Length: 179
Ligand SMILES: CC(C)(COP(=O)(O)OP(=O)(O)OC[C@H]1O[C@@H](n2cnc3c(N)ncnc32)[C@H](O)[C@@H]1OP(=O)(O)O)[C@@H](O)C(=O)NCCC(=O)NCCS
Image (cartoon, rainbow, N blue to C red; front, side, top):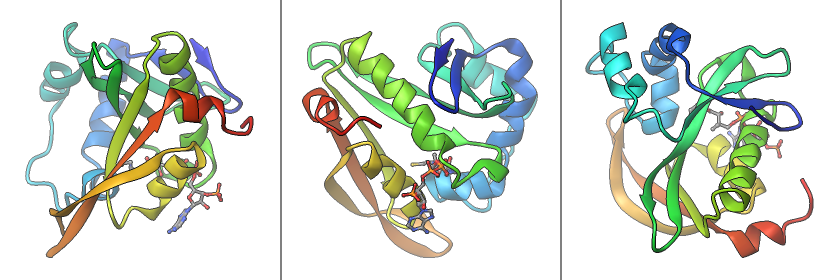
């Protein structure tokens, strides 16, 4: 188990399937995570299991726990480029009562420490849609820089939005003031 100031990260367990199903079927969570509202499909437990919990798919995916070890979200990495030592991150605080209280930044910090210093990644990136100011602020606090925009790449509630691409290099992260 990895530990931050307010959060812990641990691997997925089969018992997490129902809570994963709740988060991945939540319209507001989906709205912020990828601009999808309303959902075109709802995931049943079998689909959640197949999509996230089969052995070949659950690598690099963790549960975020709060101080009391309650699962509040999920984070992880995918799309590893081994020669470039890079990967793409994702994060979802699925328990909405925990938004805007520092848990997402803390959990990402735990993940960044792990990926930069134990996995020896050199570059980590992520993307968001341009209306997700809370996510952007959380990423900026950790040193992520905007590297580009995919114009009108997302369609949210009837309007086109840009996707913002953000990246962070290990050297930049190590030079940040201690969080
Ligand atoms: C995005 C997410 C991971 C951020 O985690 P969090 O715990 O809510 O964020 P934090 O509290 O750590 O940091 C958010 C920052 O944004 C600020 N913020 C909140 N709403 C904001 C807004 N509308 N405009 C600008 N800043 C805002 C907060 O004040 C805070 O900054 P501060 O610490 O300087 O005060 C979480 O909100 C989440 O999972 N949301 C739903 C799914 C999602 O959006 N996933 C990311 C997809 S890219």
